[in-house]
Length: 76
Image 1 (tube, rainbow, N blue to C red):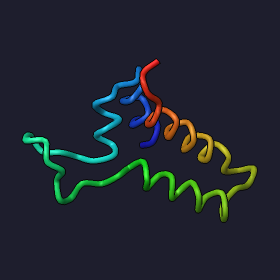
Image 2 (spheres, one colour):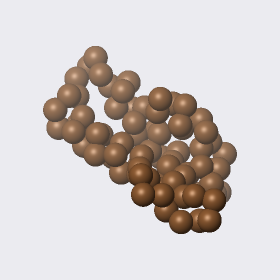
Image 3 (cartoon, rainbow, N blue to C red):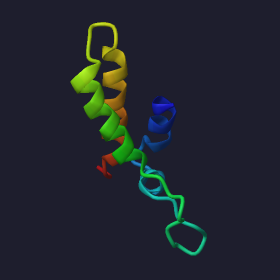
C-alpha cells in the first residue's frame, strides 16, 4: 500500500501530496473524517524502530522511509 501511495506522488505531484495530509471537499473545506496519512506513517515508523527492527524486517522500514520522503518532497 505504501508503494502504491508513493508511486501516486512521484514527480512531485503536489495535489496528491496535500491530499495525503488532509482530504477536502469540493468547496475546499476539510472533511470531518479526514485522515493524515503522513503523520500516521511517521508514528508507525517510530514504533517500528523501537520494537520491530531486525534483519528480516528491514525492507518494511526502508519502504516507510522512502514513502515518507516522496510524500513530503517538494518540487525541484
